[in-house]
Length: 326
Image (cartoon, rainbow, N blue to C red; front, side, top):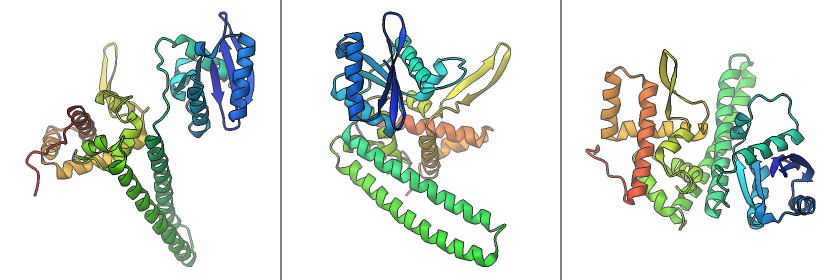
């Protein structure tokens, strides 16, 4: 079964007797979910334990549907939207009906490779909501800061002073709210029984702070879904890939597909690691002396940090710095 999810409704298609059939449109609510189940049962006469439902991850619009399916013990897969669209090849036009058929085709073709989705842990769901809120506030703070500097060039001086004062007051409130959310993140990492042990190990790695730890725990489902450091490096877009064809041998580059937020906060972690970890500083300086570009070396530092995090999780003991500064 393929479902195209949106805010108010979802369209459903199903693969039956070697044919993809459009079932219909349903309201994206509990009543709509129940109607979808009843309708599909009536049409196919196939029990729900034989169903495999696939749909795109559309954030809050698909979460309720995921939880309902799991509660009904219906096997399902909440898949990345780009993963589906890239697998479909050249496509002309777009509408919800054809999208549900495309998702259904994707699910049928990949049925042996797709792993069923699991219900998110309550502790991680709460942490994710806080991190999402913090990310939004951080963006607003940056936008206000940039707007002030841009407006100064074209605005009347008296008016600019009024707007600048207003922006500063708003930014101060946002900063206070971000600090409150950071305290809440810290509290969850230290007190939650499911997360505190792995969180403590992550925080022992020099350069890795509470926010980065929270995001890594969320993205890896507390290290249950992404169990390989190379896969996490690939996921956040810092793993280098070859760029060659025939006789042309290009430089290895990172992919533009990745978790840009995790990549950005890992950049801050890498800078702190180079500054406060003597071993990482020596590595950074050695690579720079060899002529490596700054960005390439910092990317390698990010990779090292991820591998250190996974090493302490696997070992079960905190990271120990060598020759640290006083």
